[in-house]
Length: 142
Image 1 (cartoon, rainbow, N blue to C red):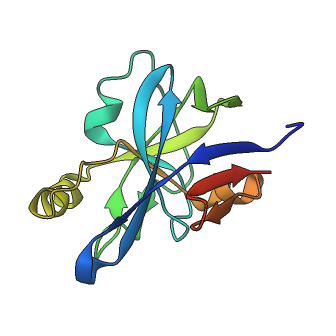
Image 2: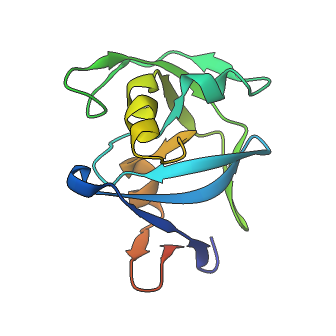
Image 3: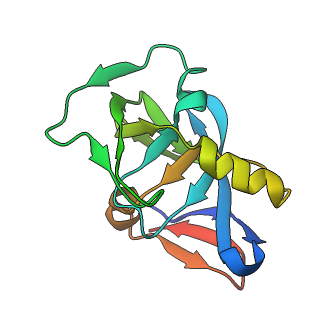
């Protein structure tokens, strides 16, 4: 990547549940609402969103469980994306998990928060030395 890519974020206050940060992206050319999760080690798609995407290729990984989205680990299926795009930044062939996040959607519903399609995890945030700028409300890929 030659230059910084800056993406607007939306900071949503969830009361006692804390704060969640969202941005927009395109997954295999389809618009997606992305939850930025600095505590997530891997990027995952919500299973319901993954089902809307055409041409996802399942891949095998050594450990197909993920943790952090709930009280216990959950089984995940892993797929390879053709592309994940944040404005002019295009990430190709990223392997991501797909998990059921209906319990999070239910919590969001009670808080009147629109559900997300993807959780952007630490492997992408670290690879691109991402900075979250709360004051300017932007995500900067360096």
